[in-house]
Image (cartoon, rainbow over all chains, first blue to last red; front, top):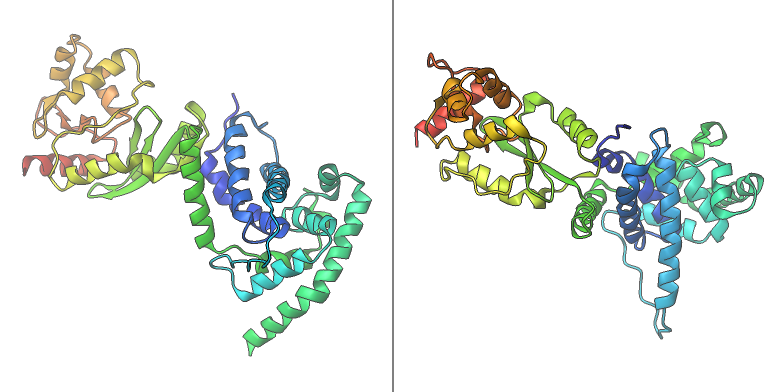
Length: 167
Length: 207
């Protein structure tokens, strides 16, 4: 019999990473639903998880599927409106975080996904390629392009606010 | 994970910046526990409760209260053991234990003498289960000897089994093994420590 630790420890250990991944892919508002759906699915499947599994990679993979579900459901529900509603800021997110989410949201989808799953979620490029299709080399290239753009857009803001903080 | 192809500088930049506030995770955790409860996939819920005998761990299945554990038993070890023996689908989910926590609170304030809670004793079988039944019959403020419990259970020579049932009682305080003392009047052992046993007996005798 395999002995697994209580699921509570899985949430405590990986909850932050999964939330960052969900926010990077979906933005701070929709991320909450994806996070909840991810951990609820994971809780159901957890007793069957192979004992030597990489739990974080498993969770990031589930988060990717939940993000797809969420995007599909949102586009089905979408109706044309005259005025676009303002996006509510997630409580607790400071201005600097919001800058990062905007910078991520401005990236092409593939680049944003690679940054989310590889740089934030810790998946190897080969695992990212398995999730998104294409090759590991292409995933690496998309990630590098995404990071280069973030360095220009978000990185400038971040270092500016860092130097302000240090003054 | 192949950390060799991560750019540590980039990862640090993103991870420190995108650190979700703890408040957000606490809120999401509460939501997850509620959703797990509603969909029936939360096999074991737990919470802790501060009492005059230290912090107690309370754990419940959908059938009822499964475990009460003293800090001396090591709460992390108790949860790990529940994960191995019953199910790893365990979350900190205080709502399922609201009633148990309320009744224990009343007990420690001397406003309650008996517990009215569904108990999950499915893991205790045979002689042990019967002995737990005998323990539950000892009234508030009274004590009984290990030998008397053995006689009451119909096995006068089972004194050691009574001691062992007390030592492995999954629901101390609620199933009052603290009311079992030695025939010579000394207090006897207790899984929460003899100080805790003395505290409980004093609390009940003062009522």
